[in-house]
Amino acid sequence: MPPTLDTPEALTRASADDLAAALADGSITSVEATRAHLDRIAATEPAVHAYLAVDEAGALATAAEVDAARAAGQTLPALAGVPIAVKDVACTKGLVTTAGSRLLEGWIPPYDAGVVERLRAARLPILGKTNMDEFAMGSSTEHSAYGDTHNPWDLDTTPGGSGGGSAAALAAFSAPLAVGSDTGGSIRQPAAFTGTVGCKPTYGAVSRYGVIALASSLDQIGPCGRSVLDTALLHEVLAGHDPRDSTSLNAPVPAVVQAAGRADVSGMKVGVIRDLLGEGLAGQVRARFTESLEHLAAAGAEIVEVDCPSFAQAVAAYYLILPAEASSNLARYDAMRYGVRVEAESTERTMAASRAAGFGAEVKRRIILGTYALSSGYYDAWYGQAQKVRTLIARDFEAAFAQADVLVSPTAPTTAFRLGENNEDPLAMYLADITTIPANLAGLPGLSLPNGLAENGMPSGFQVYAPAMADDRLYSVGAALEARLHQEWGGSLLQQIPELNLAGQPSASTTTATTSEVTR
Image (cartoon, rainbow, N blue to C red; front, side, top):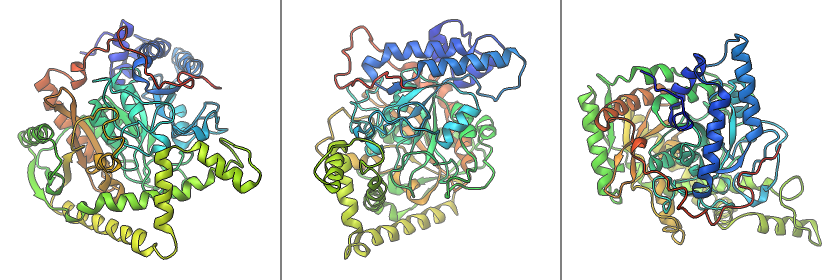
């Protein structure tokens, strides 16, 4: 029986699927649902800081239009009227877009990204833009120029990165759905740290038009939700061919919603990647992973083990390819067209001074590394070798998928670490993505869903890999495991999240003036 959504708390705790059903049958309005989430944002932001900008007027205007269209008897898309948050990496016409960087502070795009166009066509009110590591470079959202985002499970811990804002908004019940981007795990690792669900679709399945580029051969936009079905519903809205993106796939979108509803793994071969269960995997994360395999076996799946020996070089290859592409993509921020501009005595010095003032430390580190990897005399030794490793990783996946329908691993080797814990150790920060990076190097889809709590009370994540354009398999396996875990827990894992002590929590000390800023 669907829940009764007669209070603001019930509206913010409801799934996107239940909200859509209640909107369709007229028991709630989109304005009521959107207003409840805006009030929740106002209450939680001082402690969580999931948003960089909140568009109250725009979201309520869209909600009112949806309510009027529904009252007039128009046929509307499935998620029409369900509010959503968007990672600040996607351009939004008339609404400030910064990619978490001072370099773009106050920049208002004159157009929408392809995925934002799809959200508007599907008539989802956009609540605002979520916090992220600067230009998506980071694994904790501590590299945002506008301050840290805090994990609602424990405000002293990170929500992961770079999409920590989107994941934290879901866990704080300040958005029922969110859009993220995943270059090396930036959707899946935050999902694991916050007890939510996130999917990186097949490379090219979702348009990157209008998305601020980090590493073009790795970047992928994807859906974030609080359940596997909600994530599939958003996946179906986002995916599809876009001729403005030269890497966009012109192929049918897999039936992900149908797969999530089927939740069937009987007869399916599930391959455990032995190479992702080695040193560095926390004991409680391993324990939850083993229990998840037992659930899948009980649901009818056959569990097999596979080897992917080249995965050991994935992090090294990734941190050569990503900085190389980032150093090229970020060259456009030269103070001549948009962004921060620091005047100096010559054009060259103006460019240098502007980039020095606008870019943060992590961005500068990766630009230097990438420029070195691409420099004359070192290209073949570093960048060229990394691309060869990338090919070996793709071949490992191909061999593994000859033995199994899907591959699985823990989403992250640990639960959420404490804010500041890895700031002085970039290598430790980079290793937080060790289990997610291979999918980006090979262009394959991956999904993370929560599979339990560790002894410290923090969530762990279960990751599913599938072959290219077989994204529906992710949702079949994810939904089957989720159903069994929900039966064991008596509901979703987020029902166990501690209540935010909003009255007793200090405001996020690094929150800036841009938080809750509305610019239209």
